[in-house]
Image 1 (cartoon, rainbow, N blue to C red):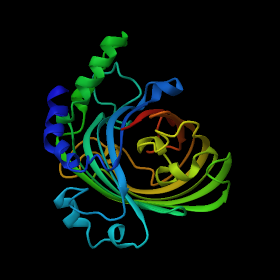
Image 2 (image 1 turned 120 degrees about the vertical axis):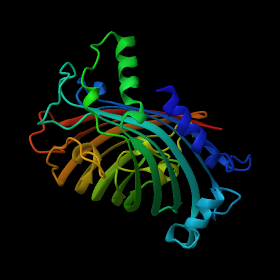
Image 3 (image 1 turned 90 degrees about the horizontal axis):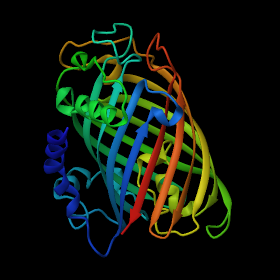
Image 4 (image 1 turned 90 degrees about the vertical axis):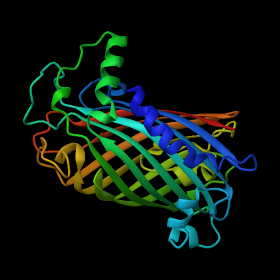
Amino acid sequence: MKSSWLMLLLLFMAAGARAADERLDNWFTVTLENDLFVGKDTGYTNGIALSWAHTGFTEFSPDNIPRWLDYLSKNLYISTMPDKDRAVSYMMGQLMQTPSDLTIPTLIKNEAPYTGLLFWSANLHAFDERVADRLSLTLGVVGPLAGAEQSQKWVHKIVGAEEPQGWDNQIKNEPVFQVSAERLLRLAKFHTDKTVGMDVIGSGSGAVGTIESYLAVGVSARLGRGLDRSFPTASFLAGRQVNPLAGVTGGWYVYAGVQGRFVANDIGINGNTFTESHSVPLEHWQAAATGGVAFGFKRWAIHFNVLAATDRYEGQPQNTRFGLLSVTYNY
């Protein structure tokens, strides 16, 4: 586990270091996703990620993002839309998925395979008070190199849980990627940013890649204070983004949302893309609901939400459910 994280850190940490300018507004976030937050330990079982973000500029340039990223994005809509504030964020993390019974050492043919993903992503943000766009590139590796087996066994040993027995059946080592985009549109707004108010946000997103390819639409409603500041990262799973409420004492909101998705491919269900591995039939049409709370105090912000979703594959023994906790520091 340590070697996998170290490899990812050495490859990509420098990509975000250039933007850490004292003139910018900077955030750092730790995110934990776990199905134990909702009382079970099956399926999508755990995720942990570290994120850092920088904002306070109106144009992307080599002064605030890496040169290679500026080169790739300088002619894209995310860079050329006029009259926008802009930000950049980075994330590195590890996700893992297991079947329902961790004590079975042999392959469980009718359940999704053991899967570990170690990843890094760069996210470019362009936003105003009504529309927020995000364009992301994710690179990573699945298979034993992702270190998920060692991570889960280490955690289970600490908490005294049974040691998982089936990781010999995980999907094979393979590099993976994904390009994704999201647009948030404020459909209604009933507040000023200094008072308790409400907004309704429509969202559309899509992704192409070997990790997952999908199209999604959704709608959510938020009630609270500081809604203008937190709007740019009010995604369906907002806790996966840095929380701009850090540094806003008294900022808070509660929210709920629904989303429908068409999923073309999912490496955690279909298995490896370029080699043979265990797979199960993918449910292409999926839906999910989420709800949560976020609040800020001094330089800190905390976000917690839960998600419930329809089956990701045919014959899935239990529904997809997990909770997400993130802590953000503004520096």
